[in-house]
Image (cartoon, rainbow, N blue to C red; front, side, top):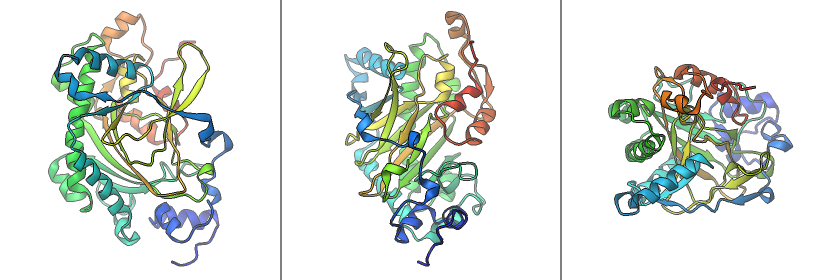
Length: 364
């Protein structure tokens, strides 16, 4: 590959405009992280200041047996506290999970000219886009991640617009993981003492997107982040990790206000990570927690992760459920049109849970 000028404009054009991504930068023989990826000290992840999350995975198969209520309570407790938990013995075959990870590697290992046709400003399809970092046009420091975003509208559109390298397994992963989401959402809504019919449940997870995230091996992982501090915008996220790890969640001690820890969600073979999104925090009037999280890079090998984001339809108005406002005595969030919330979410760089302020009511 031709020598890349180490100036911000040239790097930005090579990585973002020309669609090479960080993968192309690393493949060019990169020896050190460019300045546009070096995070401020307070945003870097120091592994010595973190610890593994010791919450055991939840066995979803036990929902069908005598331990049903115990498993329900485990799910509710996790959603109320950390906002993250792992599940095993779910409905997604382990062979499919391996195929999904393999297909992600297959896509990102394609030549740049084959990937660039999916770049946001090149592709005419709104169902699929290939991008690097979160919001390169507005970020002061870029994130060490390339990704593809596949929006689901129908099987036909998915098979037409999603990449051949991953469309079949991604579609099957989306369908099966969506079943997990519906089961968990029904449990969480039910435990709030609220009854919602199937059509309302579907409207809360009516927008579905599969991302395939690719974090190339980084020469200076201590200076970068794969994804900066943020919470997920949607209702519930299902995440497939590979065996490398790097996902960290912010945990606040409910008995010691102001005490914060960063917990690593360790990869567990065959497990899927579940986390609460902003929409569910709003709907539950703050009972369920949409936790801040971030991703660390690694110097050893490239890492992939595959989240399924389930979100309300853009036309939905999302606010605290009326039954909860009545019980709690006040609403902690205002009702918002979900399209407006998402426009705000994508309009700012990652900075913790600040995007939730768009709906939050200041009680002071």
